Structure formats: structure tokens, C-alpha cells
Image (cartoon, rainbow, N blue to C red; front, side, top):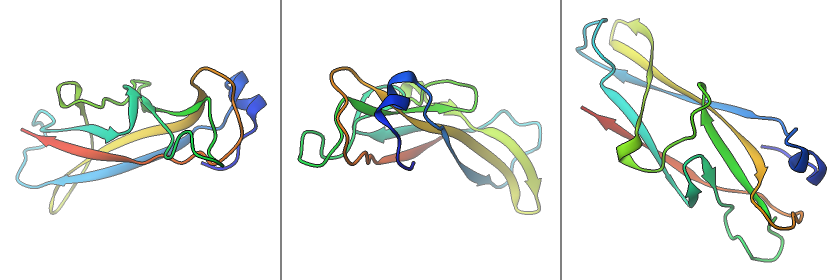
Length: 129
């Protein structure tokens, strides 16, 4: 996500970093309701907000987290009950392609913001019905 200044994080003017992934589903008719949803796992304070790895350790930023939303502005869910549908993207010979698109950015989480490393990890889990 690159380096950001404390001033830009505080003002909310940090750059959003887009990300996406595709899922191929075979054997579906083009007008089928989206059978694939996703939710996310990670060290999360709440939907749409990841805590930094090694928080509280020397050299790690504080007062900052990573905001995560989908392309519709919905906070990414960290619970299966709030899974979000993937969007149909296109048909190919091997099936239907569904896409998830989202973005991440650094946000203040309260308290004094101190500089340092700002890493976090997140996994996506597919929920197929």
C-alpha cells in the first residue's frame, strides 16, 4: 500500500489501493442467481477494518488500521453470515467468471498515530451454495 504520511491519514486523503479476484464456476446457466459469496478472515476490529500485524511491537505503526470496502462501498464482512455476493463478470468456454473488487486504505483507529510498519494480512473464504 506504500508509504503514507500521518497528515494524510489524519485528513483521510490517503490513496486507496484496489484489489480483485475472479472465481470460475462451471455448469451454470448465464441467468443463474450468483451462487458464490465471500467473507474474509483476519485480525479484525470490526467489519471493514483490519488491525496491523505485530501491533504494539517496536517499529510498528500505531493508531492506524486498514479500511477495506468492496466496489460498492460496503465494508468487507468478517463473518460468514454477512457474506457478500460476487459480481458476474463474463462467460468463457469453461464457465462463468464472477469477480470481487475492493479497495484498501490506511485509516486512523483512535489514539496517537505513530509512524512505523503498517502490514496486515487477510484471507478470503468462498461460500458456495
